[in-house]
Image (cartoon, rainbow, N blue to C red):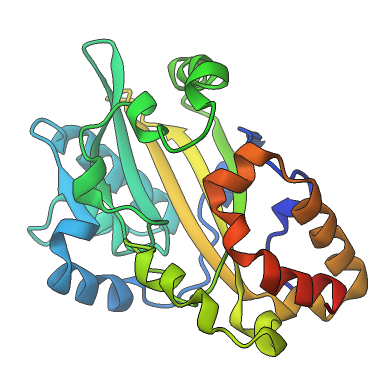
Length: 268
């Protein structure tokens, strides 16, 4: 089965890359019962997957209503924080950004598939602080991202996608250290089956009443073998791998997989 998204065919580096999509395409679905996956994580790893700041409940409530509209039926809160209730109804992770004292800050989030960070680590942080790991973000992209947040229209939904290579099929990887420590044990002959392409499909949408911005994250994971089976698609992936900028490679830690990727791409 071919991957649903292939952003490496468009760019081999970190970029904003936003495009407008129809409001009805806000969520992609693909999971029958998201709560069945998310509830056990909340029970076992509450600090990693849920956080909120004081004063965020009005925007959370507005988001809950908007998610219900998108799904075609109201989503009951059932005494849960509104954003948490909304997140149980969709496959995506939901992050709420609000402008406080002139700075956009993360004020609530439900995070069941975060890429190497936890909710407790990022709650309350500004856009600049959230993107510190992205090489060059502050110098080149921060002003543009702030302008996007400030100017986002209520009737507009924006989408972007990014990609990385990992050696785990899990959605929930708050700490990459154990996964990365095990990379040397992977049999190179099985690299295409053991490595995964992890794609994040992200959206931005403003809440009309409170002015908050909702940032959604939907993670799709496919074995690299799904790409390697198609020579044309593998060639495009190989081009992205080889031409990725040093900044992108450092941010995504691609060097950890170079030897294994050589086996997949070149048969070396």
